[in-house]
Length: 148
Image 1 (cartoon, rainbow, N blue to C red):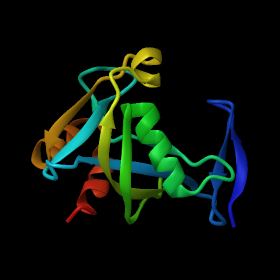
Image 2 (cartoon, rainbow, N blue to C red):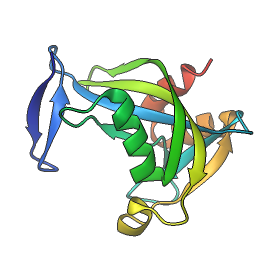
Image 3 (cartoon, rainbow, N blue to C red):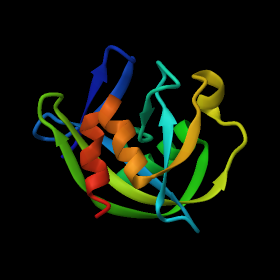
């Protein structure tokens, strides 16, 4: 049973599960012909910090719908073949993230967060992605581990 709660920081409602964890999604976007490459985006704070696209699940939205939406909003990609890989928990932050592998079928020249937050995106090898995430978002390495 999911409930809603108001995130005062963003003035948005977030889905929270019965254990009090905020539910999120992470999009491990791969290219149709380059399965060994992963798409990362820059953080809102710096072009030197790379992260996995993802975010909160809205009310009345499935995790699969949320991950497709987040990939579109944050990375400017249209994806297909959403494959559920598993869940990653951040106990100290009370977050549960459903991780999906997605196949990019279209890349937009401009997208919502490229304009609003000046986000960049780039393809990286899996080892490069591990290195970049370990420097800035080590908690996201558990998402990459689900690719194995």
